[in-house]
Image (cartoon, rainbow, N blue to C red; front, side, top):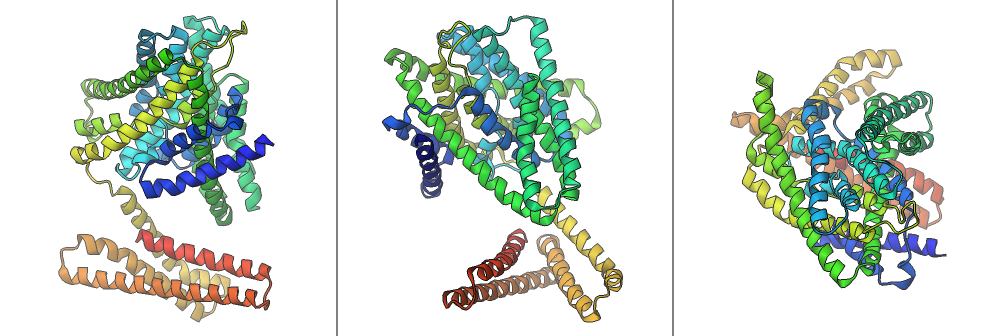
Length: 537
């Protein structure tokens, strides 16, 4: 019965934190952690603890796959060298620095390296804290880094945990072999799952089956990679990036709309649940620490948090100036960013779900049967570091972003408008031919032409309003936009009247609930289309 009660409690906690976050203007992960800690005082919930492997397998694949599907592959290619450096060398340097600090503060080397591996990777989902603060290009690079660096961190974690438990004998050959297997095996597993997914997408038409496949793909990629001791994280990322390039041609609109809603809900619940569960785990970790150990752990939290920021900023500066000294090509000059921008990137290294999952996946015992040394300390410090980065860096970063005066990035808006204008013009050019082929009436073609021409006028009015120095052109553009918005408001008002009418007919038993739902679905689709278009224009 505890399982059902736990599901309800976690759902209520995630819902409550979502409501309070908007009212209190506090980050949801921080509230979720706090609620988890409070729930830890409930005796029946104190014993809740997922098996270590389940934490990684249940949470990470879905979260990483969704982020991979929504990451720009073009942006990754443009900044590939920098992303590779921060996803490999920076992760290893961070894990080593944290391990040295933790060892100096009393942890043995094995647990210290486990802690370093847990907090080394930045988290893509935690970047929601700063999503509205950063230009699109900066945010895309941070997300790409967060997707790739998990694989490096988990390799470091696997070696450190294996050596501590007694499964692995440390040597250069062993470490090199595991790194190669992790990356090559993970990439191969991801490519295999992506190939199979694309093959099936060519044959599936049912939206439900298409989205069942989408849910299955990340877990299959992770499982195949882990079964050969390769990087499941890298497999999921490779599969997601590959599918994201092919799916626009293969997935129908109905499947895509259903999938967006499904993934948005699933990842939101998974993220929220994970943070609440770590709050519960924190209670257990604190109870396992003596007062002296707790004080030492708090000091370690502060020291590790400072180490993460210092190492990250130092690496970003050193790597940038090293590249400048080595690469003198003219195109390299175009990639340079300001020192202030690097400070912003250094403070944007938030820790989140991946660090939590790694900390919670630490084995409870060694091969000898003895408890894993300092496991409670690892969980406590990891949780403390996440809270401190989300709260402290989240509070400081807005001021730093204003100080940095980052240039605005309007690339996405400009390219979206360019694509919509080109698509609308080509559709208008093909309209007469398509109408003849289909056999559509002249009146129908004329009505569609007028709608498309109006849409094109609205699209071209936006840049004219912003960029054209001619006052008359700007005034005409503003009038076009005003008319369009009034027309949208009228359409929305008419949809509301239609919705009220069908609800009244249902209440009067004139129509069945099934008819109501069918009509509402069409009205909802039209309303969503109108409101989405209005927000983007």
